[in-house]
Image 1 (tube, rainbow, N blue to C red):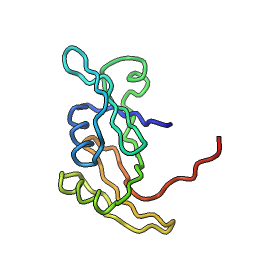
Image 2 (cartoon, rainbow, N blue to C red):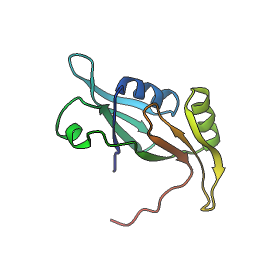
Image 3 (cartoon, rainbow, N blue to C red):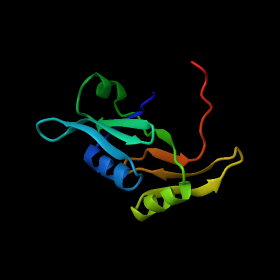
Length: 129
């Protein structure tokens, strides 16, 4: 399993957008005593994305620094329905659902801190092992 890990200035707002607009399911959320999100896990299908608050400290946060934005592709069953949900929730749409030359249908949106999320039917070929 591969889990992309992202850092946000406002991790609580990111969790809200990712669950409400993009349909992720909130899993574990670990906070510091002051309510800062240190680590959160959100799932979609068989995948998980981990996130936390930028500047919260620690080796990973220090290594990431000000890196970003990143792009994440999420396989969804119905990109058109998924798109409508994201659009209704106010997500910034970069590309409406489009049939691609490689046989997939997908769309792109930007989250509240600039990361680009693609949602579509393309399923990457997995190498054995």
